[in-house]
Image (cartoon, rainbow, N blue to C red):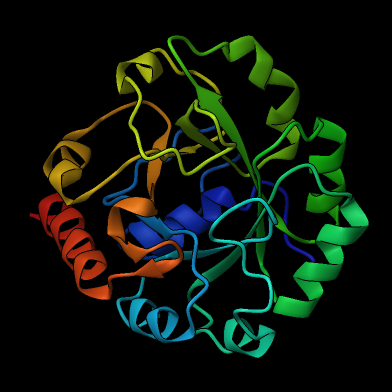
Length: 246
């Protein structure tokens, strides 16, 4: 299904703000969510998937990078993903794959969004967005963040995701210095990723970084790679949503 450009603003409006029928801000205008969007990534166990989906996160992520210990492979039937509640965005995570391959997996699993975690070009982001997928481009953050390097992606991405730089493209289990985003002034909203756990809930809920609209939960909520603890996920969702609505 074809989606409008920069659907991120509509996603944030519908998921986070009172009166979801209110007018969505024009692209490039600030969006002020009343709570953080939550993406739970690295799902590959059918039982855990059902339990986590019952907690109603905004996004569920499925990794299609064979080098990852959370690679979906044959562990999860496409029908399980396609059967998720329609209010949960189904995100496929890819690393340096061809557009046709990504589109084939998206069709097979009923994905509504893709997260690109490699050296994908702005042109490929544009191709995937034009094919009707919400596009989230991930960038690794070390001791600094080059905002100029993000500029070519701005017209073609619905979200950015900032993860901690490490040996792997993602899932390195460590946080970076969030203050590096204090001067963020681009119109694309973003997610924080990298080593987030329950111990960060209060700090995350209190963050007022420009452009921040969501968090990505992964290894800090696992009992094994790809197996999420739904109880811990539920505690995190409650902590974030209660803090931001009180």
